[in-house]
Length: 238
Image (cartoon, rainbow, N blue to C red):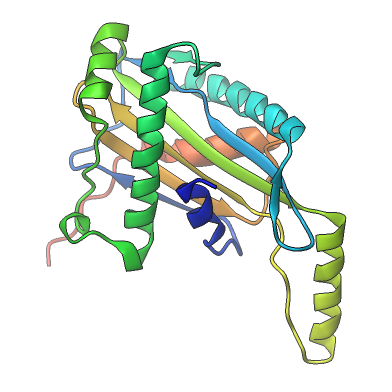
């Protein structure tokens, strides 16, 4: 299981929580710019009675298509010139860029969203990059930005739901142990292909949502990407 998936499963998902990070001086893309929206990293799984996640290929494929459709619609509203990729294995440059971003994205999630794992040199700054691989791709392909999205959605099995019911009955007699149910975790990032830097990153965790449906996928994409339009507020001097 990828590091990001392990980390995301450890995040409490009582309610929806969205937190974005930006590089110094970040401003939302505007004007005549070109952005490539990379193939989203999607998985939809069933949460078994024993608490194990079992990925469902049919759910995952449907969720990916829904998220891709939602990304297309969302980017059309933003302006600029967007290209949404639907494959990642044919083009070596895209494949390598996706793999590098996976590593960097997991590092951001671990070190910027986990207070116990913050890096001393990055506590007060957001400084992450895909380096020369990103800038070379931007020059050769003619794009200004690359947008990445990662999402994991899980749903309780019948056995898991039964256990949760038993736990609720236990609460009545004073022994309250409620097994957690399915959850949704996702992050998105925007990379400036001129500098190679990750200039915007947003993480979302929720106990609700269903990217297996078009409406659920659109809700997640809008929740993740809408903050990209807002410049961060300047910090007050102390």
